[in-house]
Length: 325
Image (cartoon, rainbow, N blue to C red):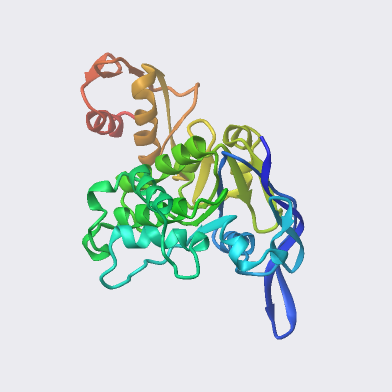
């Protein structure tokens, strides 16, 4: 696959009283066509600064950003609008604007001096609306839409802009779980279906691990680790990036687990399907699982067994353990 975006020894940050404040330095990134990349990291590590720099809203402190092998800061504004589209977190409120009106704005880089759209432009707008499944809402005003639908409108506008590169800053922020899942799945499908390169800055680590073709894992001190999600997990990069006294990254299931104080010991064996949820409940109640423990919990598809006593629920199990351990 060809590369649509590259950075060479890129340093990002901002200037304050003629002094350059570097947030990240020596970044050498590559983005391939048809690839969905999730940019993740803790707050304050520079994700938004990087995205704004890649979009040309902020100048690099040092180094270069190349889009289609051209230096971004040397591309004229009109041409830049044909190469990349940016979707920001902020809500867009334009009075009396319909879904179709907003999506048509994506065609501005291709309009003539009068700003009129051709028949082909209208076809691209309609296709973009269909791709985000909003054809039934095309004539609705923005204030009639849910937050999830509004976000899909802005994605459709970026699709109508028809650029090889789309950058999105926190596209699932402020959305409920069903809408967050839908947006991430939509962006994954669009990247693969259209061949466009999509970069998402997100805090949705669990969904990034499932949806991203590649992850840019940003830390505050060690730059960016790039790779396939599973490789970064297995190599321990997630554990290192998200270390905390309160929680840890569980490489076995890709979730964050809380560090509960555990003072009691049990051993668990049996049904794998119920095992995960049993271990969660035991950890919350302060039980560590060790092989030499005196109390053994046997899990079957129907029940939990302690000392030949069958228990029908996790709640019964926890109650029974109070009198045993």
